[in-house]
Image 1 (spheres, rainbow, N blue to C red):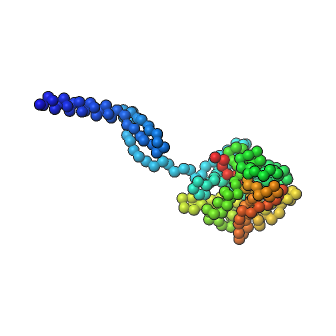
Image 2: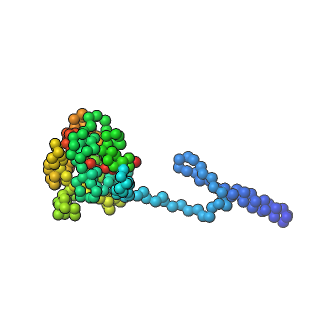
Length: 236
C-alpha cells in the first residue's frame, strides 16, 4: 500500500509540474497571453503609470516647445503663441488659414482646416502641431479656471488671460496675451482685446475665434482677412 501511495504522490507531483510549466493571462480585449513559468521571476499587479500632462515637442526648425494638458483627454496647448519665442510675447498676426505675419493671405475654403494644408500652426511649426477647433477653444473656457491678468500681475509685462486646469490638472496653466488684431498691416486693441483663431469656418467670409477682454470671453467669429493670434495644440 505504501508503494502505491508513493507512486500516486510522485505521479501527481509530475502532473502538477507539467501543469505549471506555463500560465495564461486573459486580457480585457479578449486575447490571451501565454508565459513560461521558468522565465518568470515574480508576478505582481500594479496600475499603469498616469499619462503625462506636460511635455515638449519639436517645431519644424528644431525648437522644443512645451505643451500642457488642462483637463482629462483634452488637447495639449503650446506654452506660447505661434510666431513667439517665449510666454508673454504676442507672436504673429495671421489671416485665417494664412501663414504670413500681418499679411492678408486668408484661405477661402469652407472646410475645417485643422491638420490640413492651410493650418497655420502646422505650416509654421511643422506636423507635430495644429490649430485648435472652435469646440476645443470653447472647452478651454468651460473646463478651466479663468483669470484676467493685468500687465503688472501677469509676470510678463503684458495683459492676458491665465487658463488653469482643475483637480488633477490644477498645476497646469497657459497664458494667452491680449495681442489685439491686425488689419491692413496695422495692429489694433493690443492690451485690450484678445483674438485667437480656431480652425473652424463659419461661412466663406467668417471663421470662429476665441475672443476675450477683462470682463468676458467667448468663442465668436471674425472676418478672415483680419490677423489674429494662433495658439497651437499638439497634433495626435
